[in-house]
Length: 257
Image 1 (cartoon, rainbow, N blue to C red):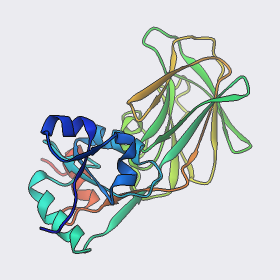
Image 2 (cartoon, rainbow, N blue to C red):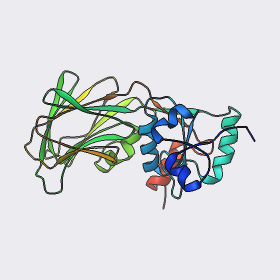
Image 3 (tube, rainbow, N blue to C red):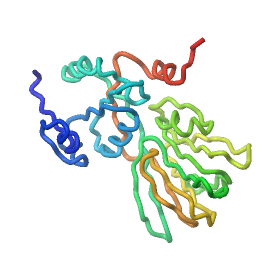
Image 4 (cartoon, one colour):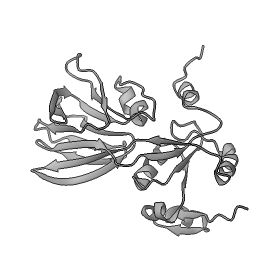
């Protein structure tokens, strides 16, 4: 009724047998905004597609409430009416860019919304990760791994590793060691204009870099993972029906007797 055109990614269009279709990577340039229906994992995948294009995302959950998919299917059409009437607000979430350097050459680049994780395999021994902030030495973490997270990602893997919960629109980076050998190695929060460099100092071959828990790359001794804030944030339509603390209470079961 609003005269809007719906564009689907090709995989979804093939299942629905209708709608204009483009490849997933072309969605940001083909649309004014994206509707992502699923869970937080689906949204993380879409976030990497949107990248720093500036196109906003409307996250709709199927089933259980998500930290990033806070709108239910029943709320979808009322929210769309507000968007078409330009009665809405955005939340901006910072993203991270990760560069992998090997033997002095950049071999991989990634954009993530949640986290960059260096992690040992199931059979590998403890690993040694030399970590610097800008030009300043922070620590050589001897641990099962290291999580470099956005505030949005602070309620993911970092939280399970005893990291802090950060309000998702903050502009900070969280560094959380995973099961560190030294109990005094605690998570640290730094400003978002600082660059984190983590160099693997172990000969273990069973070590991996994982991006948003969905994309992986094997890394080896001497590799440097450089992580910094992406130039543009990701924009989410804010739910008019619930706020972040409503979601937090529901997901973490706070206040229940």
